[in-house]
Image 1 (cartoon, rainbow, N blue to C red):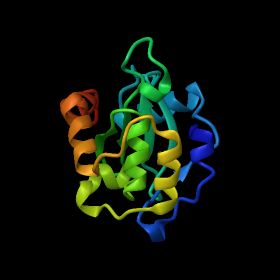
Image 2 (cartoon, rainbow, N blue to C red):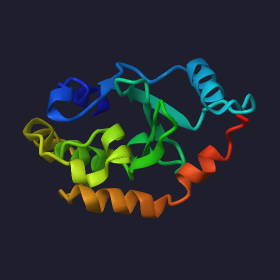
Image 3 (tube, rainbow, N blue to C red):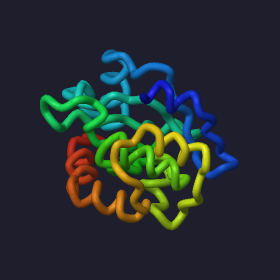
Length: 162
C-alpha cells in the first residue's frame, strides 16, 4: 500500500513537504543516519524503517515498537533536520487520513492540525485503502501522542552530543 501511496504527487504547493522513497533505507544507512543524528555510536536504527524525507532532509519512518505486528500497524514518526522529533500517526491508516487532511510528517510534528488543508487526491486514496473511518487530524494526532507520550523525550535522551 505504501508503494501505491508514493505514486501520488506530494506537492509542496499543496502544503505537504514530503519526498517519498521507492524503498526503505537499507540497514547500513539506518545505522549511519541514527549515529550521525544522535552522536551515539551504540545505536543501529533497526527499530526504524525510513520511507521518505522532507525538503530539508528530515526523515519519516515506521517505528517497529509493536512486537509481532505487521508494519502497517506500527506508528509513524518523524526526525527533523533541525532536531524536531515526534509521533506522526498511530498506524498507516491514520497516516493516510492525515495526508487526506493535508498533513505530511513534517507538518504533523511541526505545526499540528492547525495547518490542515484538505487534499482530495489523498482523501480518495485513504477512502479506498484505510480500514479505519475518517477522523479529524487533531483527533488522530492526539491519539498518537497519547499512545506514545514519551517518544521524543526517550529518543532525544539517547543523544550524546555535548
